[in-house]
Image 1 (cartoon, rainbow, N blue to C red):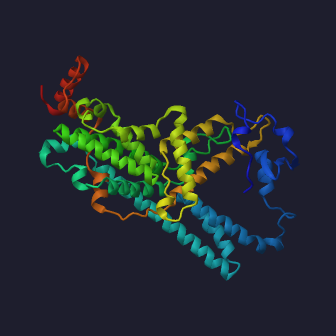
Image 2 (cartoon, helix red, strand yellow):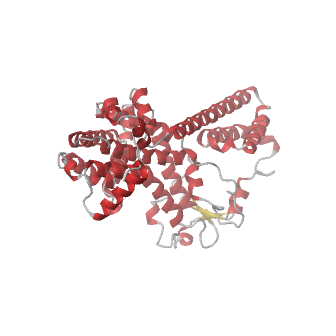
Image 3 (tube, rainbow, N blue to C red):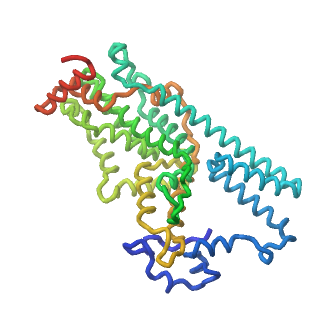
Length: 431
């Protein structure tokens, strides 16, 4: 597709280019171009441009355009397979494919391969969502487990995986698998609740699921709570300090791999109030390495340090000689935030009513980059035991984390004392 000039240079604070009409060099049937790039046009003109007519595609040209239609359908089903979970869409696809296949034997084979590949992808998606549902249904509060099982024989993460580098690799397995199942259209569906071109009638009245995107955000939250749980659970101060240092090493290896999502989840877990208040525990920790990681993920200046590191990882990925060097797993919540503000901050239509193609080019650019990152195969060997622990071990709720924290290092003021008493009463049934 044709490229557009730098996006930031095109717009003023109102979200559109005031010089659009002066810079447009060519107008063709209501569509405006600049250097062969489509800048804007009315939706009606675009549709008119794309719809065949007697002059545009006469009957004797149908055979010639069949390969192009097949190519379009193939790219559509490969890039946006989730569109065809809709029964009506699948019927239309099969009907059109049948028309193409009725022409030549070559087309018939290609159509059959396309449909089979799409069905396999949709079956894999359904199976993946069933696994997610099963994992979700088995999750319980760690406190519930501790009430029935002595804390001394609870398995902590270090018992399951003593090597922080191995744990970072297994976290990367989970990240890449969950990224891979997020469809690009889920980004649009996460934000658009009305017609994307501001018509009165909603075209998303039956919005498709964004389950895979939501599941990925839920995974980030789970990992943060898992980290906090593992730190707050040990009775002895030296064991808690050891756990903190262990997760610092895990986070550092995640950074080296390019797994920024797990890195940020670990840092978030270690910065949760029930963990950060454990001053006696932190006093025993060598925090220099943690300070470096926090600096890298510092939110100031719109996450400038992180964005610099992400660009470095993306550049490394482009010139990679191995699968490991190709890994780029962005801090997902920030990626969604960027796309959200791009979507909200720029108008879908220009003042003259034309579709703002420049905005959609930039949205496509960001999602396309994500699509490249999510297709990387994880080069590390899978460890089912570690993966099972990460995905299914019970974690503390926020209240249970505070209770465990107060039990480890007592309340420091009246507010904490009152909360401790309340939690002991509600969670443990003790006064």
